[in-house]
Every structure is written in C-alpha cells, then in structure tokens.
Length: 192
Length: 192
DNA sequence: CGAGTCGTTGAACGGAATCAATCGTCGTGG
DNA sequence: CCACGACGATTGATTCCGTTCAACGACTCG
Image (tube, rainbow over all chains, first blue to last red; front, side, top):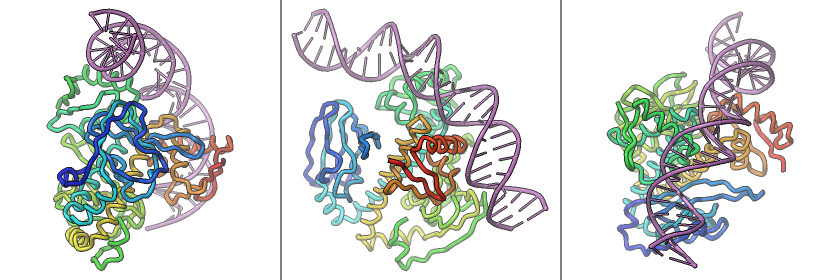
C-alpha cells in the first residue's frame, strides 16, 4: 500500500493464516483492504464454468485488494499460499481518510501510477520468448547498481516472470558459466 | 486517462505523428501527459548498454506517460508505432486541476486501480504457456455476454497476449473447428 | 500503381515445459 | 530426539508445441 495509511491512526488488524486459508471470498461484500507482512497471498478468480485463474500473487510488503476500494464485492478469492500474516484496514475508514487528506490522495495516485509502470514493464518482459533473454531483461530492470536482491524464493521468481522453476535454475546456471551473472546468497550480481 | 480531464477546461493539443516519430525522449523534462486518439504508441526504455526494451504499447483510447505525472523526467521514449494522433495535456495544469478537485482525484484513483486490476490479470494470463489456453483465458476475461469485440487488429491482439501472430491465427482456427468460438467481423463469439 | 500491412497457411527447428529423481534444510509432532 | 513431510534447489531425459522463416492473396493508402 503506501505509507500514509500506516502512519495514520486508522484501526488495523493483524491476522495469521495457514496455507489454503481463505482471507476473503469472491462475491463477498468488501470490508477491508489488506497488506501482506509475511508469506504469500494468491488472488484467484473463479469463472462460471468453475475454472479458476490466478490473477495476482502478493508477496510480503505488498498490498492487495486495493482495487476493491471502489467496488462493493470482491471479484476474486484471497487465499494464503503458505503460512502468512496479513494486516487489514477498513475500507470505509481508508476512503474517508483519503477524502480528508488530499496530500495522501496524491501520494496514493503516485503509488498507483508506479505500480502501473512496473506492471506494464513486467508484462512486456513476459512477452520475451527466450528464457535467457527474459531473465536478463528482468534482472536488468530490477537491479540497482548491477545487484539484484531478492527476498522471495527463486521458485517464486520463476513464477513471477512466467517460467518453470527448472528453466530458471538452468538458465541462471548457463548465465553464470557465460560470465553474465554471479549468483550469491539472496542476490544476483550482473556483470558488465 | 479519465473523463474528468476531458470535461475540464484544461488546454489540450492534438498532434499527428508518422511511424517512428518521437513524441518525447527518455531523460527529457516532463511537460505533458498524453492520450492516443488513433494509432499506436510504443514506450521504449533504453538502458546503458543501448539495448532497448518495449515497456508498453498504448492503443487508441488509452493514455500514456501518466506515470510521469510525478517524475521530472521521462523514463522512456514515446514513439509512434504507426500513423497516430495524440492529445497532450500540460502536466502542471493536470496536477493543479486534480488538487482542486478531490472528486476527480478519487475518480482517477478508481481508474488507476482498475488499470492495475486489468494489468495483473493480463500478466497472469501471459503466464499460461499453452497458446490455446492463453487465448481462451483472455477471451473469457474480456468477453461481455460471450462476445469479444476488438477494435485493434488481431496482430495487435497477438502481441498483447504475448503470442506470435501466426500462432494466434492458427489457434483461433483450431478453436473454431472445435466449436469453442465463432469468428465474426471484428468480434469473436464464445460458445458455451 | 507500388509499398505496406493484415490475414492466412506450410514446414522445420529449437527450446521450454514436463516428468522424474536427488539432496539439504527446516519445522512439526509423536 | 528422531522420523517424517514439505519445500527449495538442482540436474537429466524426453516430448511437444510455439517461434521463425517463408510465401501468398487481399486490401488500403498515398
């Protein structure tokens, strides 16, 4: 989400969920917006035929269901993908807070615009067919000073860029033998 | 963008560009935000090594560079991908207008939240490896009452979901013989 | 009229997914 | 405390299918 809400005196609840636990259900009335403090939460949309589609995975440090701030019902399920801790904020209170604090609104717009930028970039990176090129494009876009630190697992990273985990490991190994990258503990260093 | 700005009395300029023309340059000071009225605009990021990466393609009816509302410099090039018409709004005026109109700010937040929802969904759809499944997931997510109307070309659609155009044509043909869809002029009908 | 784009189909190749197996670690419960 | 399961990391072998190159007709636009 964004920092203003945390610094406000809005009531917030922290709750723990186990793998598979539902945080909210598709179709239910929107009460809260959420923030993942640890773990991983999947947003899953169920369509009429009963097929389900993962529409987003929120990791620690990310908010989810913010898009529901303006709708009455959740348009997807929120499911803990592993043991997770989640902070919830009351939707109405958040909206009221925003209306009374234009500066916070601007900050939120800024945050949302940033998210859109990131998502568009990720989306285009996913259009790169070659696994090696896709990985390099992702690393270059994420790296600061040629270093890419990741907090989640490489398996999560693989899913994030739309690759099978095996492919990611293989290509990372290839890239390392090619002296393009150096794998370290919890980070990847880009050469050149 | 969103409707409030058009209904406002903000000054706007309409300009035509030919294929390859630069609308703005990476690193230049942000003057305007834009809206595509016809054609197609690519946002291209150039990195240090001179590699370039398409970070977004904006089609008719879409805005672009809104993320630059809060930054001083464009972080990418804006290039017309074919003959295009573009409306521009002065960044400062837009910001001032927003600050003076909280309701419009809320509307903008709503619009941005919707974009985020759409982008996340598209991003997950792109993670589906099977071309047929990916196409069906996309059609089902976009269709209203089992009808999907498209204004852009199928070639553009192919790129949007990260497929080669040939693959899209082939799989659409397959899906039609399987009685899953019916191709019509400018629209695709989903069966069942 | 010619260039360019869209729509369409064919053939061949390469590479990503998939199935499978192993190893280490961590947490949990008996 | 140890056995067990779950999960992350890693490598091997195989299959399949999406990309790519190529070619062609239709159409628009300048």
